[in-house]
Each structure stands twice: as C-alpha cells, then as structure tokens.
Length: 408
Image 1 (spheres, rainbow, N blue to C red):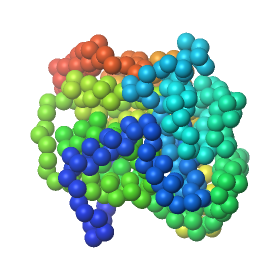
Image 2 (cartoon, rainbow, N blue to C red; image 1 turned 120 degrees about the vertical axis):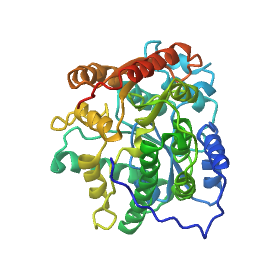
Image 3 (tube, rainbow, N blue to C red; image 1 turned 90 degrees about the vertical axis):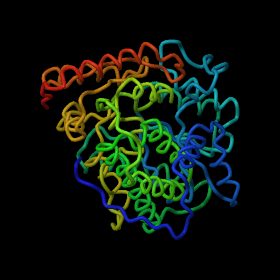
Image 4 (cartoon, rainbow, N blue to C red; image 1 turned 135 degrees about the vertical axis):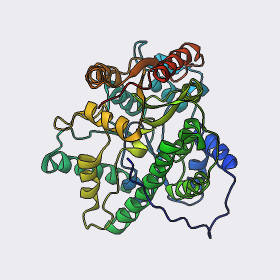
C-alpha cells in the first residue's frame, strides 16, 4: 500500500476547525445512540427517508441516490445497559443484537423508516426476523450477498437485491434512483473512501499523528451523518495530519482482524495502543472500507458497477467466501504492505464467522512466520487489564526479537 492517493483540498466553502475540535465532534456523533443528527436531517425537509443498516457492509450509494440517508446501527457498546434485550435472545450468542433490540425498545430508532440486514450470520438473520415480527419500521430487508463471484451469476443476483431495496424506498418517498443520481452518489462515496484511505496511508508511516481511537471515531461518525458532511470533515482532518504533528513512540505496528461486526468498546481500542501497538490497519467498521479503489461513476449501468466492485474489489471478510482468492493470503498481503510486525485477532465472543476463520488464519500464519495473538471481547466490556497485559507482552516479545525476519 505504498502507493499514495493525491488529494486536492478546497477550503473556500468551509471554515477550518482545530483537529481536537474535529475529533471531539466526531466522537459525539459516533456514539450518539439517539441518532440526533440523522433525525435533524430528516425533519429539515418533508419526504426525507432514513434507512438503517447493520454490519458488515451495505452499498450506501443506492440509498443516497434514492433521496434517503443511510444510518449505521452498530449496537450500544458499553454505553447501553441491557434490560429488555436479553428477553429476545439465548445466552450463548454475541452481544450486539441485544443492544440493538434495547435501542429499538427505548424508541431511539422510531424516526428510521426502514432497516437493512446484510447477510453475515444466523444472528443477524434472526434479528431481521424480530424486526419483522415486532413491525419495526416501514420495511425490513434481509439482504443476501453473493457467494458466487462470477459476474454473470453473483453480480446479477446482487443487482436484483439492490433493486429490491430501491423499490422499498420508492414506495415511501416516490423518488427514482436515476442513472445520474446513482453516479453522483457513487462519486461522493468514492471520495469518502479516498479520504479515509489517505488517513490510513499517513498513519502507515506516521501513526503517532492520529491515534487509532481517533481514527475509529472519525470513520464511525460518517455512518450517521450525510456523506457530504463527512467528506468535509475528512478533508479538514487530512489537511491537519499532513503536518508533522505528534511524537513517535517505541511501539510495534499491528493489524487488527476479526472485529468487523460487533464493535469493541472504545476503551479496548485505546488499550491496544497504550499497550505498545500502533494499529496500522484493521477491520473495524469494515463496511466503510469494504470496496478497494473507486467504483465507476461514469457508466450507464451504475448498479452493475456497484455489483462488479463487490465481486472484484472487496476486502477480505469472514462473510465472503471466494475460493479463488483465499482470505488468509489477502490478510497476509495487508500485513506485508502496511509493514506490520504482527496481527491481533480480536473476535467478539460467540462470533461464529470470526472464530471459525481464526484457525484458518492462524494455521496459515504459522507457516508464513507471521506473529499473532488472539483474544475475545464483548462490546460492553469495561475491564481491559488482562487484554492489555496480553497485548503488552506481545509487543515486548517482538521488540526483543525484532531482528528475526517476518516472511509472507
């Protein structure tokens, strides 16, 4: 990933904010479980529609093109006490569906019109069933993603799934997602991914300029505000981190993998870096970075362009099985390209996709000589001592053995 994205910043239409102020704004937006900014957007103009989506990935471009706003719903984390949500689920599953149900029952999502549940696991599928059973929202869509990566099969199927979503939105607001609107939306989200990738590329060489905790808040804020606003915020942040700020510390570089759905608490993300690791890549909020590179924004078949981007340009993920492109090799390339010293496998407790993949990754990495550790977490965890000690020991051991080559 040594290739650099060249960005041109335009400052004439907004006032530059201080970096700390920008990060504070993003943190407030990212963890506002009332989704206040989205509600204000909807109330500002009659006929506006909000569509909530769950992890891991959903093509937000099509919602934007249909005159609606996508709203990322990632659970309550350690900021929501579960009182009613446990009644809907058995004990031996992950935590995120309980907190989402809690948020719904507390009426924090009453202003959201529809809900998308991307196929990732049985738990998310069953959560969509609860939403339907409880008649939450004007529509509920469990969206299957192709596991066949032939464009004429998986690509066509994916287009049909996107058309179903657009049909639901049109039934609410009467708006058509035209070719022009779709291409415009694709262009906006291309810009969004470019700016996020610019931040990660800067941190690859200068990770002390912006902590991974701050990066997480910045990216997550973009899931609950209009993409135009997020692009403006990202441009300002990219401008700031081009400067020589921060102080280098004696830390190793790691890639975090496995935390793509249920999100770790912010304190846990902070603890990893405090324990001696610069996180130079991760799969937190994977949906915001799922597509690598730009999607064609000039075609007369924009839905096909989005489908082909998923077929040909998607990140490795536990929800994707591409037999011709093994995910362990893809993760190994990220480790190599980022110049990482090792990998931290962080899996949510009872997360079948992540935990089933872990032995595959670890067996491959043992053969490749890539160092790693693994632990499990829950989104509401608030005690990090054991994990911090484990990560710290991992960091220290690599520093002691730093002359030993890591091969991929």
